[in-house]
Image 1 (cartoon, rainbow, N blue to C red):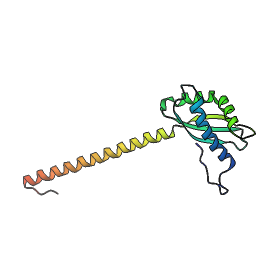
Image 2 (cartoon, rainbow, N blue to C red; image 1 turned 45 degrees about the vertical axis):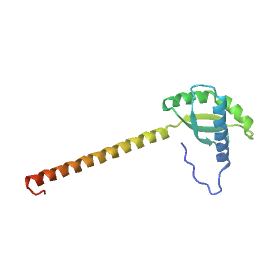
Image 3 (tube, rainbow, N blue to C red; image 1 turned 90 degrees about the horizontal axis):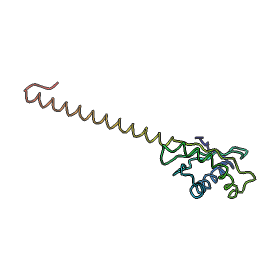
Image 4 (cartoon, one colour; image 1 turned 180 degrees about the vertical axis):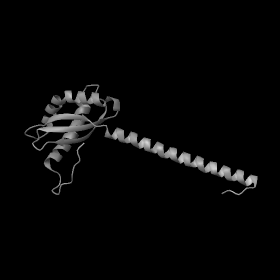
Length: 148
C-alpha cells in the first residue's frame, strides 16, 4: 500500500479524487455488485495516477480466505464500476480501476496474537520458576539448611 507524504500545499487533487472514488466505490460495491465472491470488503486506499488514467484500489476482505476471489471478481466488474463511477464523478475522464487484495491488517493481527502468546508464555515460565524457587526455599528451611 502506498505511503502518502504530507504535502505543504495540502491535499493534492489526485488525493481528493482518490478519496471521492473510495467513498463512491464503497457504496457502489455494496449496493450494485451482486457477485457472491465479493462478500464483505473494506476499501483501504485509492491511489490515482497523476494523469487520472488509472486508479489502484486496495481492499481487505472480512473473510481472509476469500480475498483473492474478491480481487478477481472486483477486477472482472471494474468496467461496470468505472461506468457507474463516471456518472457520479465530475471528471473529464474516469480512471481505469485496478483492485488489489491487501491482507496486511490480517497478517498484523496474526503477528500481534503470536507476540501476545509468546509474552504470556514467558510470564508463565517466570511464574513457574519463581514458585519452584520458593518451594526450594521452604524445603531448605525445613531441613535446617540455609538457602544460598
